[in-house]
Image 1: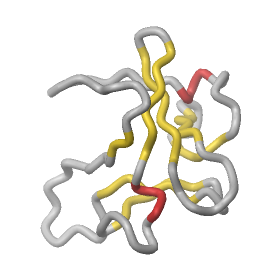
Image 2 (image 1 turned 90 degrees about the vertical axis):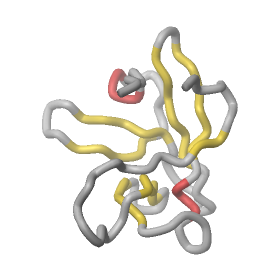
Image 3 (image 1 turned 60 degrees about the horizontal axis):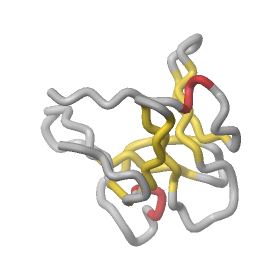
Length: 99
């Protein structure tokens, strides 16, 4: 599998809990939060992510319909994920591992 720069992808969690509440990564651009949605589309407009490349890493931009921060950012100090506006932050760079 390879990611194509500029393509729009959906990220599906591979957790195996029975009857999951949600499994698609969903950005909420109004609240700057990221969670899991039970489906894609409809009210879950944040389940679509544009792929950007930064050297050997990737950045993901939420395509949610509401205005607000869109760049996926991992905070390794407190173990959270949120949306930010600055692609220059180190937590916005993601290495994609193929299992």
